[in-house]
Amino acid sequence: MAATRQLSHVYPLGSRLNEHGRLEVGGCDAIELAREFGTPAYVVAEDDIRARARTFVEAAGTHHDGPSEVLFGSKAFPCTAVARLLADEGLGCDVASAGELHIALQGGFDPGRIYLHGNAKSDAELTLAAEHDVGFVVIDGLDEIERVQGVAEAHGARQAVLLRVTPGVKPTTHAAISTGQLDSKFGVTLEQAVQAIDRVAASPHLELVGLHKHIGSQIFDLDFFRAAIAALAPLGEFPTYDVGGGLAVAYTGADAPPAIEAYVEAVAGAVREHLGPGKRLVLEPGRALTANSTVTLYSVESVKRTASTYVAVDGGMSDNPRPMLYGASYEVQVADRFGGGTVCHVAGKHCESGDIIIRDADLNEPRRGDVLVTPATGAYGHAMANNYNGVPRPPVIFCRDGEARLVVRRETLDDLTSRDP
Image (cartoon, rainbow, N blue to C red; front, side, top):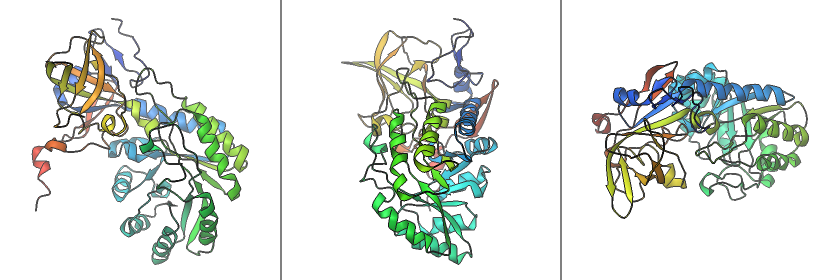
């Protein structure tokens, strides 16, 4: 097999099958990584994330006619090393909890370029943001205005805020990740926005710098983004428009999401057309920055042939619950024998019949001891990892130029009981 063979777009940029037929990510042999760090493990191609971040920044500079800012939607991969990498690339950050704020600050993001989101912000979270001089608070409801104002007043500050508006646009995506429809739990309606704008404007401790909208995730059709931006026009002109994130990524070879450049050009054009020229444009990619940067490595524990063939691995819904939550589809291969021949279900180790990572997978003679690789797990894998069945959470490994480094260690059994009083 040619050493220079480039894999499909589902895998991290630069991934290849080496002269031994083994997958390499960031120049590191997947089989050797499994031996050194164990499985399951999240393996991240550092250069992949950097490349996508630079593409967003450059596209915004090219296609938008005013100032722009790219934020990391940190819920996709809340990890200090990822935060540090993206802060180094010049991005800001959006956070939706005290924990995400803590990680962002630990990762080196400028507090003035952090945006605090959330539909149920606690007083403690608002206070923590004020104590760290967080630049922007995104107001999510009418009852939040007085609380944000009270915290700002207590700290002798004037807090910059954006108002999250639900534009009434329902994109084609899974219901659990659709946020722009009228009955969304997020934001205020267009009618409520008029009242909210007046109330914020009357406050001496709040500065309304603009509007925010987000209509959902894993969206392929750019027209939904354009329609949501156009829906904001009746509310008047503001200096800043945060258009959220939501650009789809490829989880299987059949997926063909829009290019980053096409997405940025579409939203920048819609802002210019409907909201006015020269506005400050804020983008919040999360999944589109990190999903395809990462693969998950598993070890095969058993191959069971009954009415169906089950290839059972040492992970599952504790390290990737998305197939169970959203019916998400993934690809899988034997890391040193790419190809097919055996149709099977790749099953997790958990005590749930629904713990199936990939149904109807096609693997090359899978057997116990094989290392399997599932690409596109860099968004909401580590973020949603859990301890179901008392399984310790996997490590995160950064790979670059053939060098691997541990950035999040594997949990131990003692970690599972470390919070016991």
